[in-house]
Image 1 (cartoon, rainbow, N blue to C red):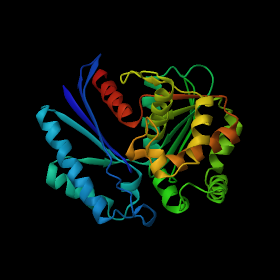
Image 2 (cartoon, helix red, strand yellow):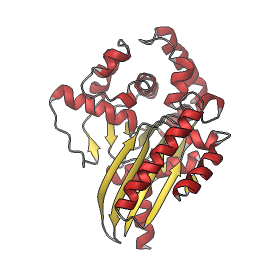
Image 3 (cartoon, rainbow, N blue to C red):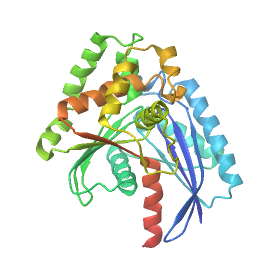
Length: 309
């Protein structure tokens, strides 16, 4: 059976098409579009008209690709920007009317659950506890888990697009803006800090978006040819510190010139890296790993599990 998975994220829409059987799957097509559905509206809990139009255009194009592959079933999810927007359900309704694609608006907890499921299929999480982290444009998900058990998880509506519009007013970012972000994290992420004090994870596992780009930059800098089918991407804590220290000194044009940088990440990556640095510093995590799987793969493997049952 051919299935399509659509992830309507705040910054990026993803499409994944796969041939699935009870015991196996084959990825046939991957695609992403920088829709930026949260732009100019996310902190007002609305989808702006321009973002609305970009979303409809992207879904029309996805539907054309899906039809060309003769997909039998579509699994589409919407996350932070749409679930919090006062007009989010209206957009979902219009997409259904125009394309026939039915979209499920998932909760933050369900989003964290699926991200964890994806990461656990990509990596051996081992016997020691990890902090899994996915920085979206609208929300950020954290999960503390080892290979056999989930200890804690929570979604926070403090994603990169929200942070950019609220805090990153100067380019390059100023020390005052970084300090303001740190104070904001102290308050907003206090449940995370308490959970980590209790469960003491040792490794940060990053998923999707910013982490993918950080690995791309690292690979470009070090002449590493990354296998796009890999489930774990090359990276480490020392690599992050080097990239972060250089990144925050640059303006948008200079960041865009960094080998491995892509335009859809160039604005959000600064605040995202400030957050990663804050997490590493405050939680004394010793290692960083990057998962090649996140939400959309979590959905796909959930489908596979349903076929097996």
